[in-house]
Structures are given as structure tokens and as C-alpha cells.
Image 1 (tube, rainbow, N blue to C red):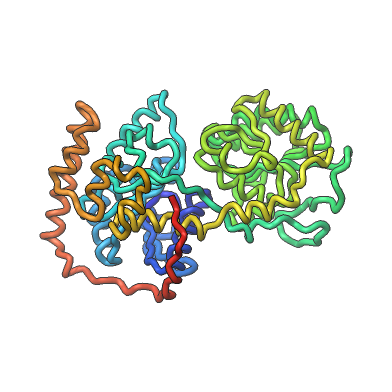
Image 2: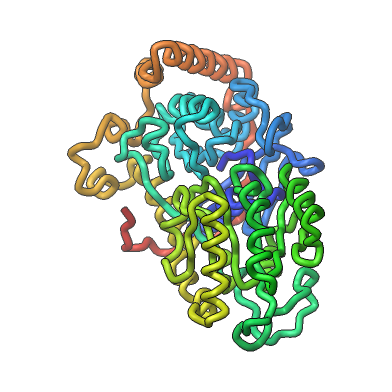
Length: 467
């Protein structure tokens, strides 16, 4: 697994990689994670269940993403891959430089590659156009993609794409029994043991990185209006980012210090302690692929108000959510409807936890991801992997389980554009020459093989098939 975004930084991508890695290890696979150094966390670290993490020393330029070097990561990457005897490179996140470079280098080394997209990028603005062009280059030679709208953005063959949802560890996001005395540091306002009355304080929780794409500007504009319309309401906001100053200024200008609590950054293991203080979870994001945090909130027994963007409308059933357009007026109105429904006791939030537990499981995600690995490695037949569409499989199905020659790879990259295609071909040729030099300068037989973490025997093979 390769990504710039990983622990100790909290977030949905970080949690996804860790949980998927641990479940794959439980199923008998060897998994390592490559990410960049985080402050004093450098070199090799081991996490629970034997997840081995390589923190490589690269310069960070923006939102925990490293400076794109294209080629300088290759010698170190090759050394790690050979030492750990890796067969599949699984990159995560469009905005991760390490991910994009690892997929390129992995294909140069003849490895199977998989890419998982954790975000939704648009098509109209300059940044999105450049990002999509880069993604088209990176994914021209990838074996399989797990994503949402990446088929359009990177001009992919739909047959090489799988949609696999995220999940949550539901046991870590249990509702707080009422009443329950607690000494947890974040639980300052326990929920009442009885249904909400007209004068009871209703708490709205927001747990998010405070960036523009997370809808922080929308949240800043909506909070004063929500509190004005519903006086017996308060907000708890957890998270950090450049937009935090805007929220603080809004609180001071409207004198809302007793109505809005800003907790700052909160560790992932404390997120549940924040959520169980609330009745409603507000998610004003402007773009979102899945939104793991809204599943965590529903698991904690919160009624979810969220914007209908990206893949969010498909995450939770309608009785758990109220959707709003990513506009101030509609978000205020949707929050008002959620408050009215809770005060009228029309929503049975106490049943949400068990329902979420039945819907999302990391074991299921690991099984479906494992099936992708088996498919690209040629361990299962094309009929099993592609299903009824096997007859329409493109050149990706014809190359399953074997390595492409350099000329075949260049043909794929050349089709990325009149000028971009030539530039991409040049990058691939240089990457291949670096690989040849490393093979001569530092042969494989001179690289020590690392000892594996002791593993449990894999469980019996499942009969379930996932499409």
C-alpha cells in the first residue's frame, strides 16, 4: 500500500488503508505500507497486527502531499519492494504523489498494480483538468482501479474498474447508553435519558478537516442562521485546517462563544467520544467520494444532515439522512427539518448502530479487494473476474497475469494526447533506464531479504463471489 496520507495523521484515507491492511493480513497476505515521514516518525515502524510501515524522508509541500520528484523515489522504492518480496503495488488517493510515482515504478519493475481513488475531482477548473490529465497518464498502464467517477476522468475501460465501498469498525462507534456516567475527556454534555423536549438543548456535531472542499465556508455562513432559528441548539466542531480562523472570527462577530465549541484537532480514537455528545451530524462537504465519517456518525446514533454531492447519497439509507444542496439556504433548511424531526421523536436513532453494523464490514471489503488481486494476477479465470462481460474485455484482459514489453507500454502512454503522450513516453523511457541502471549498479542478489512478521494461517477459502 502506497500513499502520502497515513497515520499518525487522522483521516478517512488513512483509516481505510490501515483497516484494509489488517484484514488482508488476517486472510494470510503480507502487507506493507509506504508513506512519507511525519515529524519524528521516520524509518520503519510496526503497527498492530504486524503492519510494517516505511516512512520515507521526502519534502512535504501541500496538505501532507510530498514534492513530486518523478524519478528520485525509484531507487528507494525498488529496494523496499525487493527486500519485502512484494508482488502487487496498491496506490491510494489521486492527490498522493507517492501513489502516482509508485504505480509508474511498479509497472516498470513488472509488478501488478491497483489504484484506489478516495476523492472526486471535477472537470471544469484548471486544477481539475491538470489532475485528470496526470491521472490518465498514471492509469494508462494500471491493472485495475477501485473508484467512483474515475472512469470518465481517466478515460478508463469500465471492465477494469470495481466499486468497493469503505467500511467502519462499528464496535469503535457505539452510541452512549443513557444515562451513563463517564469520565472521558471529550464528553462534557451527556445526552438526556429521555426523548428530546421542546426546551432541551440539541447538539449538532461537525468532525472534519477545515478546508474549502470540506464546505467550511458553507458551515461558517450557516451556523449563525441555524442558531438564530433554533435557540436551544449548540454546535461542537472538531478538526483543524486553514479555514479554522474563519470559524473563530464568525463566533466572535456573532458572540456565539457559549453556543459553539471548537475542539481543534481530535485523534481518531476520540472521535466517537465527540460524536456521542450530539443528536445531529452536519456534513457540508462540497466534494466527497464516500464520506466514512457520516457512517461513523450514524453508527454512533446521530441523525445525519449532509450535502448531496459525489457518492454521499449512496452511502446511507434515507431514514438516516437528510440531504441538502451545497448551498447556504438549503443547508439551513435541511438542518431545520432534522431538528424538527428529532424534537417530534419521528426518528429512531437508537436503531442506527445495528443497521450500520450489518451494512458495512472491513472483512467484506478485504474479500472483495482480494478478489481484485487474484483477478489481475491470473489466479481466477476471466469468466469469474469479468463475469458476463468477458467477451467485451479489452486489451487489459488480454494481458492479465503477464508483464507488458516496453513498446506495448509506450503505445498505451502515447494515446494520452498529442503533446502529453510524447511527454509521458519520455518519462516512461527515463524510468526504464533508471531501472536498468539500478539493476546493474545494485543487483537483486546483493539486497538482503527482510524477515516476515509471523502470520496466522489463512482461513478456509470462501465460496462467496463478489462482482
